Length: 409
Image (tube, rainbow, N blue to C red):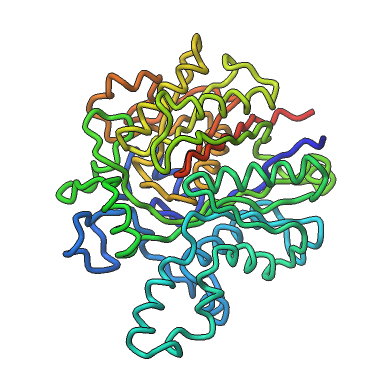
C-alpha cells in the first residue's frame, strides 16, 4: 500500500480566515465564542455561538459562483483554495485527484430560508438554485468543477465525525491506488434559528448567555453543554511518490485511520465509551504504533457532561501506562459539527510542525471524573512525533486519525 502525506492545509473558522491566523489565535488561549449577531435570538434559550465574522464571499469567489452556494459550500471552497495554494497544485487536476468533503447538516440555512420564501411567494420563491445550494455533496461538487478534479468524489455525512471520516476515507483511496491526490475535510454552517433551536431542545448546548467567552469549557467541572461553531477545514493528501516526484513540501504523514460504531444510542455514547477506546486501538494497530509512542491527542472534547467523561475514560483505557497529553480546541472554536474533524486535523498537523500542543481553555477546575492528562489554558511546547485526532458523532459513529511527523526517507 502507498504511503500518504499531507501537503496542504486550509481553513476558515471563527478563530481566523486562514491557517496562520487561526493557529496564532488558538495558541494565545483565546475564544471565538460570542453573542450571536447574524440573526435575532430573543425567542431562543441559547443566544451564543462561535460565528465566522468579517467573511465576505465576494472577496474570495466570483459573484456568479458564490451566489449559487450555501454558506457551508463557500467555506469549503475558500479553505480548499488555501490548501491547494500551499500544496502548489493548480487545475485542471484530472482523474487522479478526488474530493471527499463531509458535512453534518449541509444546506440547513438554505432550507430554512427557502421555507420562508415559499411561505411568502409560493414554490417559485425558492429559486432555481434552491436544491443545489441545499445538497450536502455540492461543496465537493463545486470544488471538483472549479479545479477539474474528476477522480473519486464523495460526501460523508456522519454528524460530528464527518471530517475525520472524510480524511480517513481519502487516506484509504490513496493507499489503495484509487487516486494520487485527495482534497479532504469537513465544512458546516448551521448557526441559524432552526439549527440552534434543534440542539437547544435536546439540552445539548451551553446556556451561558451572560458570559459567552467561558461557555465552551471541555473537561471543566462546570461545563454545561457545547457551543455551536461553523467553518471548514481542508487537507491536501498525496501519495508519497506523487509528492516527491513534483517536489512538494511535506507537512506530515497520515499513518492510521479506523472507524466503528457504539450501536448503543442515538446521541449518547456507551458507558466508559468502549466504542471510542476500540476505535483508538484499531487506529494504532493499523498504523503499527504502540500507545506509548503517541505524544498528543486532540480530543473530541465537546464540553458536554457525557462526552468528556466517557472520552477521558476511553483514553485511559487505551493509554493505561502512558500519560499522553490531551486537549480539546473546541473551547476556542466552538463545535463545528461536521467540520470539526477537518479543522482539528489542521490543528494536529500544525501541532506537529511547531511542536506545540494547543490548550483546552476555560478550565477553572478539571472534572475529577476526567482523568486524562489535560493541557489546560496555556499551550505547551513539546516534541511531537505522533498525534491522534478523535471524532465521535450522533448515532454512535466513531472515527480516529493518526498523524506523524515527516522525517524523510
